[in-house]
Length: 392
Image (cartoon, rainbow, N blue to C red; front, side):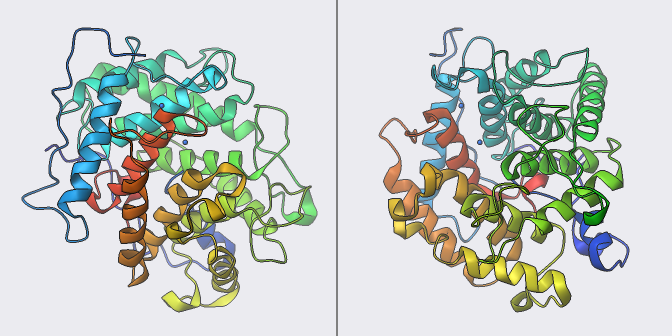
């Protein structure tokens, strides 16, 4: 199995200078994220999920590994001729989102564009995403998307993972140029809440409108962290202002609200993503040894998420139909946090996901089968530790 060793480094609080307050949080900000036709080119489903090393991680059972293999085989079978994954008529404009998530699910098993059992599928997905970069302004998104910044963020994340492993020089230069322009578009599209809030700012569904909401902001932060990891220039001020935005969006119930101008109640899925952000940034709650205002903020987030983070509650807490979305981020946050809660949670999410898996290896439902299958496979493969964006 191929291992990503070329550019990627393991990012942790210990790898950065000792800073305090918001500067430390901003310098370390990361989202560890964060959401795919028949296969008609004559290939058969010969690719198989490879065991990550001589033996499975202790936490991963053979039953779990078999579920992962079936899920990845489903993605292989359903990749389309152009390298994308089917998204259904309602989400037709989000094919770059689904393709990026499916590509990362295959890479989470250890494959790269050059090596591994899924190298061919990853390369085809990478080419599809690259073809959807607009030379004029750097936006990466499918045609017809009403909310193109989702596609832009997830595409940046996936391409950064491809750029950070062994690719041939032709791809290397092309991905570098695409990501550089994409980052520039994200930077200039950030909103500004004004001097009173230290010019905190997030992002909205479309570029260059200077509005903001939480889920798109999280997607852009995730992408910026991935790009910065592989050497693409990302202004520190952009990160500083985005982190300040998330802090400003924590409301009285401890959760993160939908948007700065729509504070209301906290949103569980966005709150889970914020937890992943803060833990990847090295800002811990008191239980994990943190201290100060940031630790108190993260502790409140954990308390807010307590009723939503149990996979066993099933549809009881499928808030706004976002059960997969929520656990996509919550799993990453707990993996970053570590401690005894992580293995307990992993066993529970493993059980819940295997119960939801279809006989063909997929997970189906809202947003689409490709979307849910990719997310489920990524969650179950977190212990493998192959994608640096998900490493501790």
